[in-house]
Image: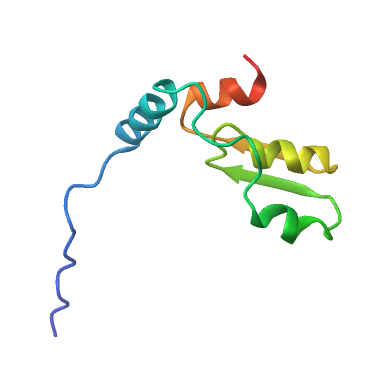
Amino acid sequence: MTQPRQQHSGPQPDAAHSASRWEERYASVEQLWSGRPNDWLPELATDWSPGTALEIGCGEGADVLWLAECGWQVVGLDLSATAIGRLTGQ
């Protein structure tokens, strides 16, 4: 029996295109997000013992900074150099 072909909803953006769109979004404003961690993070992670965390798509880094202040070893990654610059103070 022949398997049906997968249908795609349209062209898939490549990584370079996605990165440039995020870079444009961050570069167009002084601050994109609130600067506070996501509401659920302190509620969820307060009782956890600090450990190691990786945040993919960390943006300007509010969650990364909150975790680090709580004793976590954190690595934040983002496609936007502007966002990472804001996180690192550069």
